Length: 589
Ligand SMILES: Nc1ncnc2c1ncn2[C@@H]1O[C@H](COP(=O)(O)OP(=O)(O)O)[C@@H](O)[C@H]1O
Ligand SMILES: [Mg+2]
Image (tube, rainbow, N blue to C red; front, side, top):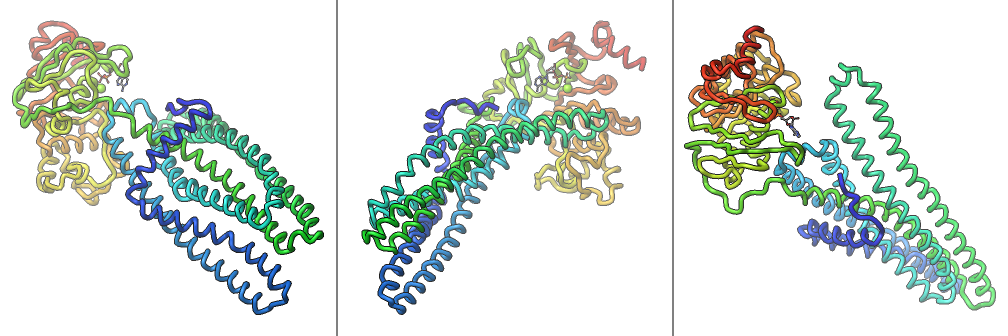
């Protein structure tokens, strides 16, 4: 994934502002919560300033004057301020977390909805694990930014300014002495920020790699085991896992260096206060209370600086995360909807491929000069060896991709002019890899269309020979299906996808028969189901058993992306071309 498209600090900062601007758009529905939380934050910071000042008053006024009732009052006040700080902080955290979680909820939904509109090309290019990192990991980081990062940075900044003001107000000379340490601190913070920024970016990128790798390996575990790839894959994993560790340790290194460095500078500032301020006290130029207040303020002064750098990290990783999330949101589907869609109520005449050429991702053509037509009511079969381009033709027809050259015309309209949803609603697609969702069998057949009755689901299942095995399952149609249908056989999965195609009663049936081999009994069931499925329906079929397609009105023979022959079974046989040869091959077998 390309998110390293800017280099250098300057460009990064400009970009950050744009990011923040865009992110704040997501905050706007919750702006009152956010603003209230912010106000409470300033309040807690201000309350934090009160303590040392009360100490000063206690020492300089009441201890000096031996006024015990005054001391009581101060102690009570001190306690009261602490309690108030507790309550305000509680409310602030609640509000902030609520806001953050709501924003994340919105973002996740928007991202998911966006992904639903992406074409297969998008998913071809990206590992699922990487996309998951966006949806889960990156968005969580953004949440941290809303709830703790940016917001408390503002609080810290406010605290810093407040303390500086208090110090200057109490004694500007001593304040300047304390501030003399600041340039050192800013320099250290600057260096730290720069380094950590870089390594954080690296950490996220490497984490995404780990995610993608795990996703793939867990998904394909049986293959890994069957081919004894464990050792090899473990080595690969160790490699990327090690890379991740390296970049993490690099960050830790900067941390381990930075925080003690800040401690030393705090100590330096303290020493300066004791040395210079103590001298002033001895000369009577400064009260003892002010000296104590200075020491307390100074301790509180360096804490936010510490925090700021810590927060800076969160901010950095959040920026990187935001960049990736927004990039993903900005990725346009490679097929854009027509400006004004033609209305195709009913598929009623003909599908025509006119000199269609097609390549995946601008690579070499996998389809060249494909021309054929399918009239309503016709059944057309695509035949060819693996890799001939059969599935590609189907993908074009379902408008998952668009042809590089040539046209696909449906009832006189270019497919690009049709509303994608409307067109697909006329099609039932049985894809090469039968895909089942987790849920039960019933929901897998009607795919959430509650208007399809259970009775018609059963009717469809009966027609495609699925009813029998379904009713033999312990819970019948309500039998839960595990992820990707792991608890069913390949043949059973196939039959369920047939039932799904049938129950939608499509105007066009597209069927890419699975190549996975099934036992001969299931095969007979599938053959029989196929015949029923195709009867009297406009269909485009890829079937591996030539016996299935003998009755097709037209058979198109493909080889290496080109149409070699087309005609009826008899015509092609008498041609004695590729089809004849394939037929001989299967017949012998
Ligand atoms: N998503 C894809 N990205 C890139 N190339 C692909 C993709 N799908 C298929 N191909 C390539 O396109 C060619 C035709 O594939 P396909 O249409 O799936 O053939 P068939 O269904 O006839 O077996 C093959 O060479 C294959 O490698
Ligand atoms: Mg195929």
